[in-house]
Amino acid sequence: MEQQYLTIEEFNQLLQEWNGETIKISKQELDDQDNTIMKLHSISYENNTRRVDEYEPRHALILNGAGTVETDQQSNQPLPSAYYEIPLEDSTLYKYDHSQFSLITDRGKYTIKRDIQ
Image: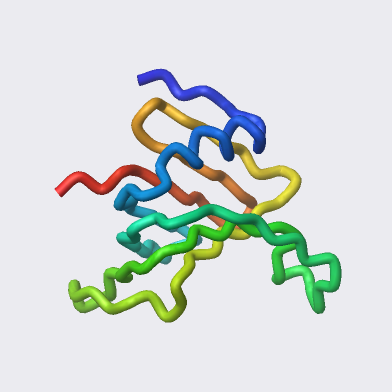
């Protein structure tokens, strides 16, 4: 499928349609790959204008819902909080190919897709 680049507004509008769905979030940063399965209840955004350092994101996408994280031992552990945070930057690229979203930041790549089991 052809991927299309989205604005943050287009991304948000399409992702909002997935509320109530079970999604899989894959994060790849450097040599680290994590997978999270979550029942998506709502989507929100945070603006952090009082950052302590550059590692803290200025903006963040907050995916709210209960879920589990796949661990190195191939077992699943509950999410430590009832949300999953994706740091956003002014340079973040938002892609959609009609089956999954990709967010590409300076730190890594995040993929969000419906979890079909």
